[in-house]
Amino acid sequence: MTLSRIAPYLQATPLTLILAAFLVLPIATIVMVSFWDYDSIQIFPAFVFTNYEETITSPVTWSTYLNTLKYTVIVWAVTLIIGFWVAYYLAFHIRSATMQMVLFLICTIPFLTSNIIRMISWIPFLGRNGLLNQSLMSMGVIDQPLEFLLFSDFAVVLAMVHLYTLFMVTPIFNTLMRIDRALIEAARDAGASAFQILTNVIIPLAKPGIAIGSIFVVTLVMGDFITVRFMSGGQSASVGLMMANQIALLQYPAAAANAVILLALVLLLVAGILRIVNIRKEL
Amino acid sequence: MNSDKRGPGFYVLTAFFILFVLFLYGPLSTIFILSFQGPNGGLTFPMNGVSLRWFENLLFEQQAVGDFGGAFSRSLVLGLMTMLTTVVVSLLAGLAFRRRFLGSGPLFYLTIASLIVPSILISLGIGLAFNVFGLEPAWYSSGFGAHLTWTLPFGLLIMFAVFNRFNPAYEEAARDLGASPWQTFAHVVLPIILPSLIGVGLFGFTLSYDEFARTLMTSGSFNTLPLEIYGMTTNVTTPVLYALGTVTTVFSLAVILLALATIAVLRKRRARRLAG
Image (cartoon, rainbow over all chains, first blue to last red; front, side, top):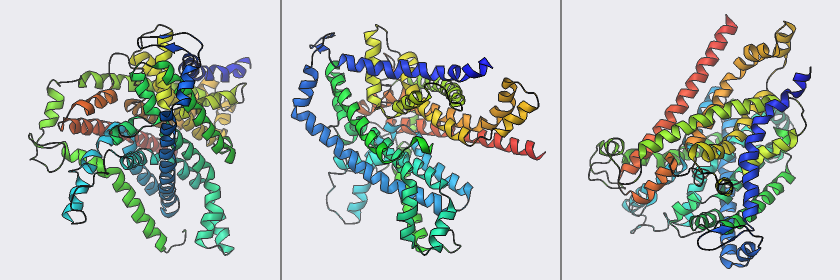
């Protein structure tokens, strides 16, 4: 019987080793390097706080973090509203399981192709000579192309919503599917209106899914740099983009200090969400 | 809601859902159409004739920048490596988590952490760690590890969902009939969870095949496909970019459909076996 006692340890070993090597060790390295010193050519071991000082005292950092939080809040709110109603529709209005599966897959398929391809695909649509501007002009709504559509905050948020909504739909759909339909019947028999059922029964029971989706969206947006670089045309900044630029300039210790601050912020937000709902219980 | 008559809410939400699907597919379909742009056509509408020129250019001609074939084969191999490893490791870990073991809590939270730590951070960390230890980053070592930190949490969460719904009575029955633990696993557990394992593999492959941020600092001197596409977006001003988008999207779609078809066949075969 000793084998069966050690079996779980053997089975968990590969996962543990991979995470230790490619998650724990790299983060430890980031923390270590964030205290290192650097000049224009190389980085060298030291124990200095200058990287943090420079990061925290720079007004650029503050505006970049504020901008990142702005994206996070807007994208979170939009994906939550879209995600909830899409999930609600699939879970409560589609009656056959097969149809649910088919519609769900239709939503999923675009999310399985490259993020960059999906971003490129906005360009012919939103550009100055893009589809949207041309159809608006031919309809006579506007007489010159709207400039704000591409390479703007609007484009960044639009692309992020396009990229990340599924991360909200899936967990909410999952929790909605597990709600006992008898509870809704009971609420209706007790005289609740559709709106009361929604706010008093469905939304409270959907909270774990909303929390998981929120964690996904918040962490994805906080760390995003490619969408911001691409869709803002270099006119907006995010923390991830700031890090990517520092990396490109080989300022690794500065990037590492930024990474530590970003990680702390992300963990704080996630902890805040987890205070509201206990996710482990729901798995 | 569950009553037989559809309320107005149903029609409003149906319209909302259709708009959402259009929002998802609209932009993708524009690049699909524009990849058939004529030889003199540009990056936007109108179409200047219809041709396969840009596909030919992509597939058979030397590009000014980059190496599409090499990048594609590297991404393919990396995707397959990630897929196999994700399936095996998350299956083992999923089995482990069915029982209580010392450290299961921390390991669970570590796996979740792997999911929520921003990709660029993982990329930077692995790049730096390889640098500090004097190792050369390469797509098959550091890049592979970076992809696993993204695919394994998804794999494990799917395995959790699978084993939460798994009825242990099947295993008990096998044991009572004298099956060894290995026989129980191979003849009872594995066939039941096989469709889900294919799902895990599909997830692992597509996540790796499309992963950009985690590959950025970890791929070494050779590009994977997403990095190649990214390079092209900053250098290439012809519809060959859209042809590339179309080809890779069609490839992803083919992989997904193949996996779904396999799952369907397995389900049908099992149903037939149970019935017969």
